[in-house]
Amino acid sequence: MKKKLIASVAGVSLLLGASVGAYAGANLETIQAYLNHTLTVKVDGVPAQLNDEQGNAILPITYEGNTYLPVRAIANALKVAVDYDGETSTVLLGEKMDGISIAAEKYGNTYVTSDPSHTTYKNKNYKDVFYNTGGASLMLYPDKKYQKLYLQAAALNKEIKVSIYESGSLKLLKEEKVTIEDGMKTIEADIGGISEVYMEIDTTGEGGFIIPLTTSYYK
Image (tube, rainbow, N blue to C red; front, side, top):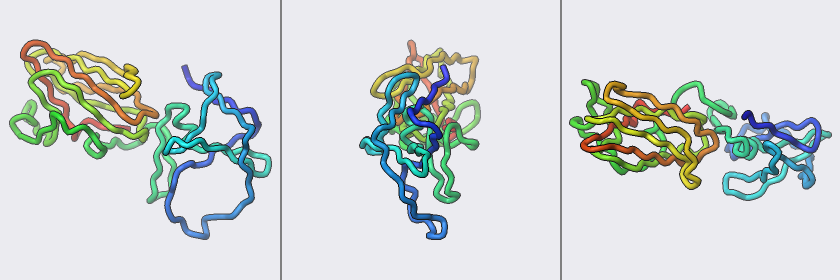
């Protein structure tokens, strides 16, 4: 169900709640605003606490009759990915236009290999991969910056099952089987607002798997 944001004041706007670094003086303007202690925010009818990146409670501000909510806190409450591009001074919400390789972000290094005898699948060398001749537990750290995970996986010798969870809560985000006939299969999972992703690869018998770090990506 699409989430609905309810605020107890009219004319609510959004304000970026993240450090954006030094900014040219000509682009900044001093204003007198007020911290609003009375505003209540609800997501799907449930009160939501607004927090900064460190988990500290933060308040909306009111300026000239309008109330401004911190973008990062609202995005987290709505499970929408949020990031900031310092080069273009742009706030990025939701799915990004260009995919970012999972190798570009932090990931658990267990089962990672760059051995060509393990990274090559159907005559293509994927350079860096998760690889094992049995089952495995894997970790990714998207850090709430992405809306989608496109995970590529191939089964070796026998069918495998890939289960993707939100780490901590162990909420199941996606579960799919990958057969030998599937080849290199792409599995899509919604990871908006999620810091850590836990994955289980289940195999049977002599089955194994290969998951490329270079062609699996976030958006």
